[in-house]
Image (cartoon, rainbow, N blue to C red; front, side, top):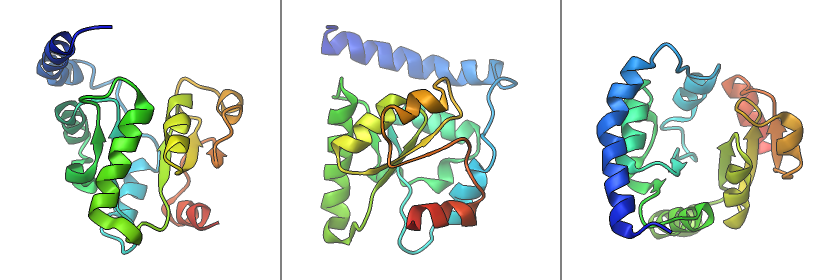
Length: 167
């Protein structure tokens, strides 16, 4: 295991180089179809709060979201970022603790939406409904083996996605 100092140094180096890398690889990065539309649809909508749960640092996540013009849709102050957590389940538990301190009994349902088995695992670790979107490196069948609450091949349009959440 790396020391805390090594992890800290690695993360700061990554953050310093990330924006330069994003600009150089801009032609390779895309926003998935319907992602921005869903974020805009649910942003500020009563009963929903959009948070990040990411293995990235707060600075790294902010740089990526800023680069793709999506930062305004997320509540960064209540999101969960990797910092003191080597394991995603611990990161998820910390994010849940932040949410409970803020909203407590007002939390009716939590959803973790992602495209990896790790996303499904950490969502289950905190009792969230997991929605797996098979748009990344992992196939639909591989994600289905992890038994998410829902699995979809791609993000639907906002109204259909809201209906999925309410089903």
